[in-house]
Amino acid sequence: MRTRRRSSCIENARRRKNGAPSEDDVLAGWALIRERVDASLAYADNDLFCEKCSSCSIFLAAREDKLAQQRALIQVLQIEERHMVTENAVLLKRILDAEAEVERQKRHNACLITERDRAMKPVPLPRGPKS
Image (cartoon, rainbow, N blue to C red; front, side, top):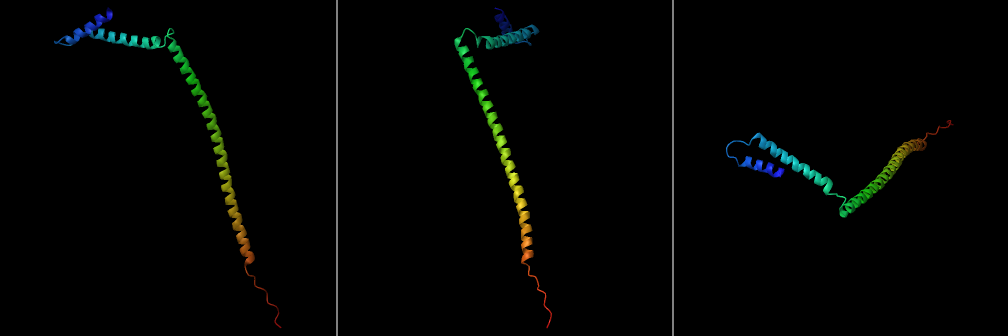
């Protein structure tokens, strides 16, 4: 009854052709809107997942199972990610070590080439005494 009276106040305010609605009509309209919003929230909180309805409990159980599966999957993926990060770090270390070894080998090779060139350089033989 109360909501009908408020809605009729709003409708009366809309129907008026002369002037704006009164302050009481506006307040009644806001109160009606607030009441409907509160009723919708109460319905969403209580009636949607009622204890009487077995399908709601089945729905909630299924949702909990799905959440548990997703959490387990997340944990597995986090473990795999840690393994991949560790494996990538090992591979990166091997690459860096290999590059350092290549640089060392290049320096050593350059030393060997200079030593070979020095050994292959013709050495003038001293001339013996003139007879």
